[in-house]
Image 1 (cartoon, rainbow, N blue to C red):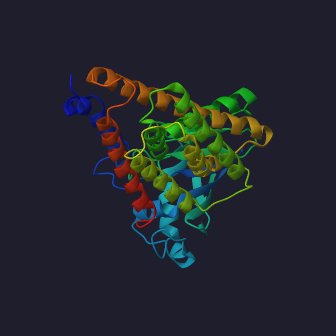
Image 2: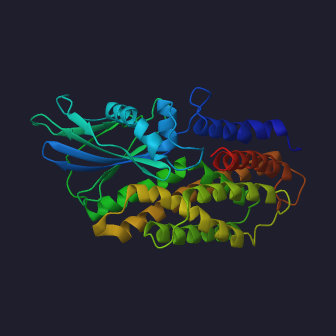
Image 3: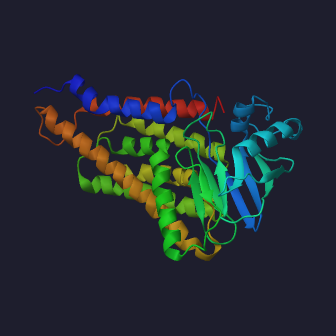
Length: 370
C-alpha cells in the first residue's frame, strides 16, 4: 500500500499539532504565557515571611504597566517605584496565608526591588491565634495563563518544596524535615515534570530521533545529549559557570531550528551524537534555570542534583519510546515498497516542518520580541 498523507495526518500530525498549540498558546483567550515564579518561605509561630521572585514581563501583563524601558531589558527602578503600590496590592491579593479555619492573616509588603528582568518582593503575614496550622495559597498570574506555576521553597533547611498551579493552589505550612528518600523522590519527580512541560526540550529530542530506526545510534545520540546537559546543569546550579538566561533560551530555540532543517539533508544519525552533545551543553543551562528556582537542600545537595538529572533522563527516555514506537507503527502500516531499512521521508519532512515552525516561533519570541 502506498503512503497516504491522510493516514499520517490522522494518526500522528494532528495530535502533535493540537498538543503543541494547546500546551503552548492555550488558545486565543490566554495569549500571554507566564514564566515560573517562586516564594521562599520562613515560618515562625504566627508570623510567615516570604521572599517572592516574579518576572517583570508577567507583572506588566497582569497590571498593564511598564516596568522596563524596552522589551527584553532590565527593570527600571523609577518605573518599579511608580508601580510599587499596584504590585503589592496584586501580590497580596493572590498570595495569602490563612488558618485552617479560614481566617486570613494580615499581609505587609515591603518596597519591591529589581534584579535584572525580575522583581523581588518581601511580604510578611501576621496571623491570629492558630489551632489547626497555616496554609499558603497562591493564584498568581493564573488569570493570564491557566498553566502558570509557582514554586514554594521552605528555608528551614528541610529541602522541602512544592510546585503550585491551578490544580493545586495551596500548601500546608506544617511540615517535618525531609528525609533523604523524600528529597530524592521530590527532585526525581521535579525532573520528570520539567521535561513534561518543557516543550522546547521535547521538540529538540523529537527532532534528533526522527530518522532513527536502530537502537544503538539512538542510544548514542540520547546519551550524548544527557551527559552534556548533566555537566552544564551541575556547573550552572553550583554557580561555577553562568550564562545570561536570554542567551540560553535563544540558543535552545536555534538548536531546534537547526536540527529540523538538518533532517531535510541528513538521514543517517550515526554521527549525530557529536551535534547533540554540543547542543546538550546549551540545554543544560536551560534545565539549571529551573533547578536554581527549586533550590538545593544544604544537607543533600548531591542526591538532589543527581535525582533531578535522573528525572530529566527518565522523561527524555519516555519521549523517545513514545515517538519511536509511533514512527515504527507508521512504517508498518504504510507498507512501503522499500527494503525496510529507511523511513519514509514524507513522515520525517512533515514532522521536521512542524518542529521548524515551532523553533522559529520560539527564536523570534526570545530575540526580536523579547
